[in-house]
Amino acid sequence: MTIDGLAKESATVEPAVVLDGVGRSFDDRVVFDGLDLMIDKGEFVVILGHSGTGKSTLLRILAGLDREFSGRFLAPDQRSIAFQEPRLVPWRRVLANVTLGLTGNDVQNRGREALAEVGLTSHIRAWPNTLSGGEAQRVALARAMVRMPELLLLDEPFGALDALTRVQMQILLMELCAKHRPSVVLVTHDVEEAVLLADRLLVLHEGRFILDQRVALPQPRLRTSPDVQRIRAEVLGALGVFDERSELQ
Amino acid sequence: MLGPIVLLALWWALSAAGALDPDLVPGPADVLRAGGHLISTGQFQSALFASIKRVAVGMSGGVAAGVSLAVLAGIFTIGRNLFDSNMQIIKSIPSFAIAPLLIIWMGIDEGPKFLLIAIATSVPVYVGVYGAIRNMDTRLLDMARTLKLRRSTLIRHVIVPGTAPEFLVGLRLSFASAWLALIFAEQVNAKQGLAKLMSDGRNDFRIDVMLFVVVVYSILGLVSYAFVRMLERRLLVWKQ
Image (cartoon, rainbow over all chains, first blue to last red; front, side, top):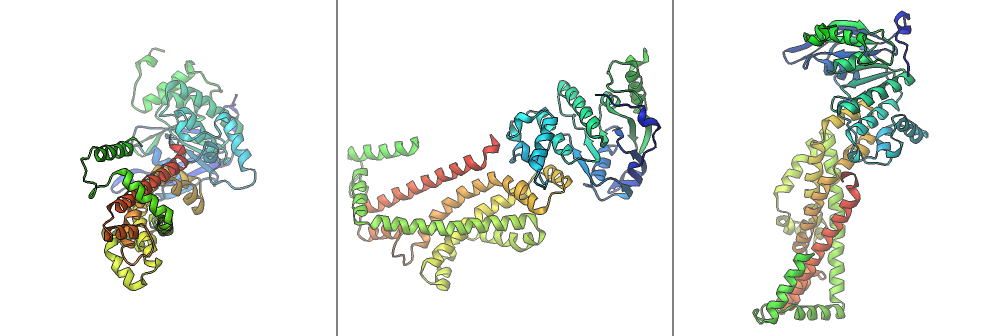
């Protein structure tokens, strides 16, 4: 698994997502207003921010689940989303969950391949209720990837998993992205996860992006590497959190 | 099954000990003998067949209508406006109260009997399925929206199968209503049926016959229960 983070730096590719003055308010409370953003094709963008800053709201707008926004945005039609909870249909088996709504005569095989990619070939006929949290989230990823998304939206997809499973899932996600190269917008609270995965880091604060930083480190990244630690400290700083451990370096 | 067996043993023991007046409460042996006689003349079989047919026809129609109306009312606003208040009204009317009306309108054939049972059995499944759809996990429905499911796929694979637990609770109540409605339906001019056996028994002061019919009703109740349990095992495999 290697992604050349540097190669994309120079290339001027056409954008996959364009936000043009996007705003959203709930009753009187303005969550954000006039957000502009351009995301390149194949770019892995991570959005960080405190709770309530509107990260998930932005993702819901991009997913087409929230139409009460102002402004405009462009995004590919082929969009998939995965949430913090797997949101599998409990009364359909794993394979049927992955292929739900797909048409064509090759659907079963596509579903099987997607499940093989997330390492769940042996669970094809399992019921969602019998899966562990990590397995269920793998199914959710397979369901997202089988639709060959040009834009993959991830709303804290690993937030509810234990630390070990989370690391495995991060590696799996990087493999899938390296293979299928969708543009990705991932929302997370986990700064370290953000630095490990992102081509580009955004910090959303009080309705605007207060940090927009490219992370040009090659993959795979080690959490212990000084570069990762340095960027992590910078991002924490932008979030208003200072970690004295990184001051020591 | 332990409960009913204990009850039966108790009845037997009390009768054998002479604690029950055999003229008022015949023992199980007498009741069985009365039943045996009804079976040998074929009266029992034709009564049972007539009653089961009424429940089967009436209940199939009632349950199908209840589920269909619940799906329409649960999913479409127009369906909700059209059906939900009506069903709530029907729910609050004891269906037996309208039995005389049905007879006036439809005569004394099988029609009003089917209809009465259908009305009585449609309500519990309607309430269960409608409630299940209205309370369906919005996060799951959001997910379905992002998958851009066709409405028919959404209804068939996500919404309707998810109502199975509440449907089965409703179905259990529907069975109870069905046997009850059957008794009311057979009160008036039924030439065949369990209630007819019962009223014949009353007219002839054959308490053993009447008790035999009661035993048959309870067995039918147990069989219905077993049927719902079997459905549960099939429809709720995903739930373990």
